[in-house]
Image (cartoon, rainbow, N blue to C red; front, side, top):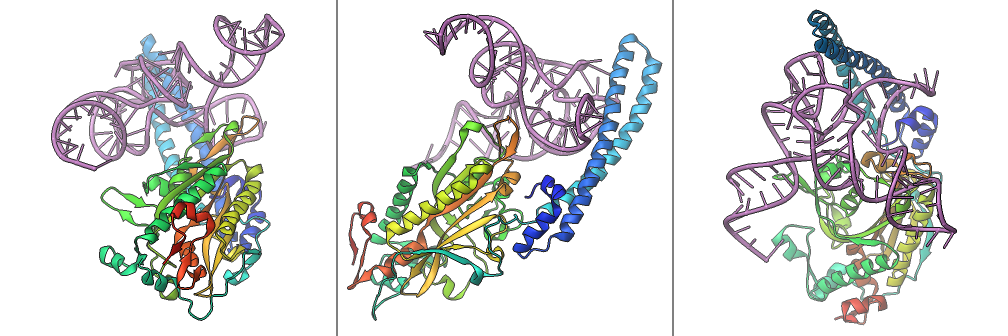
Amino acid sequence: MLTLKLLRENPEFVISKLAVKNFDAREIVEKINALDQNRRALQLELDTCLSEQKKKAAQIGGFMKEGKREEADAVKTEVTALKARSAEIEAKSEENNTELNNLLVLLPNIPCDQVPEGKCAEDNVVVKTGNEIPELGENKLPHWELAKKFDIIDFDLGVKLTGAGFPVYKGKGARLQRALINFFLDYNTNAGYQEVEPPIMVNEASGFGTGQLPDKEGQMYHATADNFYLVPTAEVPVTNIFRDVILANNEFPVKMTAYTPCFRREAGSYGKDVRGLNRLHQFDKVEIVRVEKPEESYAALDEMVAHVESIVKALGLPYRILRLCGGDMSFTSAITYDFEVYSAAQERWLEISSVSNFESYQANRLKLRYKDADGKTQLAHTLNGSSLALPRVVAALLENYQKDGKIEIPEVLRPYTGFDYID
RNA sequence: GGAGAGAUGGCAGAGUGGUCGAAUGCGGCGGUCUUGAAAACCGUUGAUCUUAACGGGUCCGGGGGUUCGAAUCCCUCUCUCUCCGCCA
């Protein structure tokens, strides 16, 4: 959520920035500012009315003590009239503020200066590439065929147990999952991130805090008996640790990492995009989350991008880093870097990480604040990134490391897998 | 699942209708003393809306009600704890 203060003081700035996200905000911003003005006027009126009531109530107390019945009764009638008036103002005010909030949540976050203009994925800017794309020759297989050949991932069995998009990992395939999770977590904790293991079901308030609710409820699995949601990403429970929190100035930086399974309904997906591991309903992911002071959040973002890059580098997968254009960014983000690895058998790029700075947009919803050096309460900045999401990493590993009828495990993973080849 | 108890400031914990945003203790911050620290002592210490400011309003788990007046009484929801049952 954008702050009212920014909208009030700098409406033209907000409108021009949202244009970068191809969002025409003028009408909404103008309505919001009118409602905000009305809100303040009503507030003032109500406060004055309540203040009078309080004074008179105290007066009555005094009269009662002195036994002045009649005087007390006279004031009582006055208060009754005031009460009716304040109820009226309150109703008006509530209606006004509901409308205001409904408009406020319609505005996406404003992109920061570095965000390139553009409408779709083609307009994203490649900021860096690394590692070589391997030559696989004629007999290369896509990962879903490799998975079958070595009997390490069983998609059909998953369909039997649950449905499409819920694969069963077997033998070395299962071991590889566990190895990757541990490798990522160790890598993150070595960089100073604190490991947490959060619940993978969250309540409604948490869903609202990070922006999944109220709009995107169709994306989450919902346990209706208890009104809990299965997490679509560890970002949700981990960021919500800081919901309604005021951090002390000396509690920064906050660096957390968590592994969770992630559950996404992905309604409406089809075709080659969902083949094999490319898009699943349940998958494993290790996430990093940071809470920073505003003046430090962009340095933190650079650090996170460099951190994720070093993981991908270590895995030896050909990669590129994209700076997303305004049109391709998420609703809540101020800037996003996507990491893609090249899948040599599918001959396409697969997204494996997304690193974003949300500035104060999430914090405003979460009421996540901190005390600055002057002791004033300010909104903090939140950031998060995948480090990494497993399925497409596995897809790329299987495809890019296939050689002579077997799959080689990258050096860095061998201490975790306990084997050098899948064959 | 059954029975009972409870929810108050960072924490502990008083407060059962009138000036209570709330005693007290701990913790935090500032100071005195000290070469420094500890101890002791003194002071200070919630959030939020509104106002140029003075000031004013709201918040004692959430929502509703009674009353001139509610942390305190009533209704309702949620959550937590204890005991029993079940159990990885």
